[in-house]
Length: 347
Ligand SMILES: Nc1ncnc2c1ncn2[C@@H]1O[C@H](COP(=O)(O)OP(=O)(O)OP(=O)(O)O)[C@@H](O)[C@H]1O
Ligand SMILES: [Mg+2]
Image 1 (cartoon, rainbow, N blue to C red):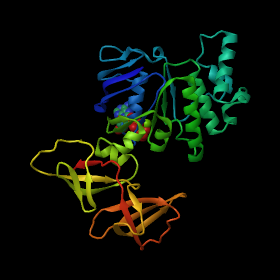
Image 2 (image 1 turned 135 degrees about the vertical axis):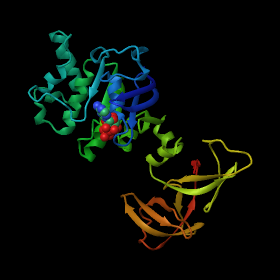
Image 3 (image 1 turned 30 degrees about the horizontal axis):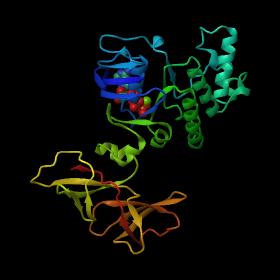
Image 4 (image 1 turned 30 degrees about the vertical axis):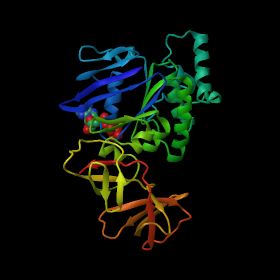
């Protein structure tokens, strides 16, 4: 449905998007996730046709819309675009805003389509209201209804929730996801918030300095990160030093079986590596095999995140434990290690 191959975008003199390849099947929801300035908006704008591409190609429904030889103009791509600041017309009612892009509809069909959209985003009683009379969340639902009304082949959303407060965001992400799944529209959202990406998307691209480091499900990004950047960027965790002897990773905290091969290992020499320990790899146990001193703690309601110092180890570790295991900073904390799947990178 959406296929992006070796995409490169140059703005001014700088290459902003580097050799990006990914695809979305019809009806799938994707996400571009990455730190500020990594090129998410630029990539999204190139899909919409707002900028020329320098290399590669973009196809929508098996038709090339961008290549070095071809550039289908924005208005011919049948793409919906939702921006961060909603960009609703303040002097038009909600219904008029939604009707804005529906030039080809005649009167009755237009009314039906607008009502259908109002129903979809659950704002039926607000058709005659003006955007300023609505809450931020309601305004964003109008923006999405307006983008969906012309039945786009692809919906692009650039940080659609970032102007909203966190509590509202969480509910809205779930609502919008349900709306998009119900309308079966293929969508790609940009965000730098990973919980938002995880709640929204079937597939997530983690971007770093213009390149996609991994295009995968949220589960795979967390449990099987392919690069150190992804391992560090997604979720929490700390790296400890170890040695890859070809079969196992040997560390000060024990020997762990290897699961994946992310680099070439020579048969004769061992390799210095960094092993990722997630906060849930450490399990509190009063008679645990390892002892540590609590350096700091963060109360998170159902859980507490402890930062731990193990005698003789430079790296501090993280442990997430149910919050009834409540101990003071400075006290001893014993734990076992339970790693289901080792993640490690050469130093
Ligand atoms: N028109 C332009 N000309 C030259 N450089 C640009 C232009 N627009 C953006 N850039 C640069 O491209 C890089 C990526 O910008 P982009 O807006 O795509 O990042 P982003 O990932 O969307 O960031 P944010 O999360 O802050 O929105 C930045 O370094 C930016 O300065
Ligand atoms: Mg941006």
